[in-house]
Image (tube, rainbow, N blue to C red; front, side, top):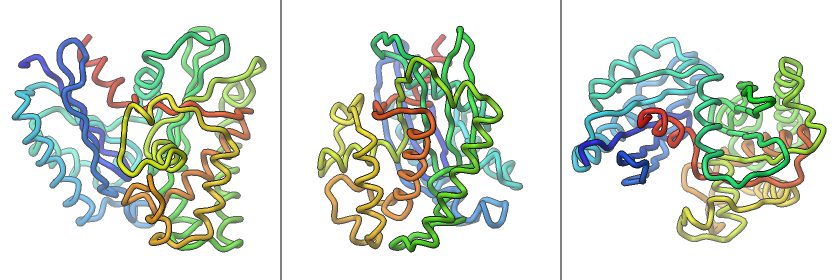
Length: 306
């Protein structure tokens, strides 16, 4: 037990913990909605209440780590933190609370860890395997070509698109068009920077990860309570993405919460996430998506255990 490692992912919308033993076996996996990125897009700073929410959860996670006798690990920060002018305030506070190293990842490194985690344990497939990681502040695409990982990070997360263009309530046509334009422009720029990610001649196996995909699967299955085994490696058609995108678009956040499978804290940003997901699937020519509950946490844990 003393060889256990902990990884904490402080994302734009959620803060998550993975504790694994020396063999890589999961001892604990936790998630809390903290919305760390609230207001960052407008102000350029992490808000005091967002920091307080996240630090409270880090304190809770440190308690779990103590129970599991964790002495080694890493807190990783992604889009919300790397975009913030007061990122040092987060880094110092997180280190003081958890006692483990804190690392703010650039988009390329985030994509690499996410790719390694999401593709571990997948069966062989003749198609190129590509991941799409729709976060709160950014979306990453990554795939290996000739043994080299190609990755891009887009300023295109579900919280960012919601705050900048879509809004949190039932979607109006003008807001939908603004959000779609924002999404299309970001994907155009990403594919222009690395054309191989936008055109895979022999087809692509698209693997989706993070909260947007997991919540979509729960809605599709009608799960009243989260079941990792049911969500992990569930296959979703693009038409399913579109059905839920359109259905939720016409509802208020309160109405969305009535659906079995909707995660509290995602009801106001999920439509934006589904719009991003659908646009990515269209661009890479994927008619289906394989969900993965293994992600950046698992990639970082495997790296720590090497």
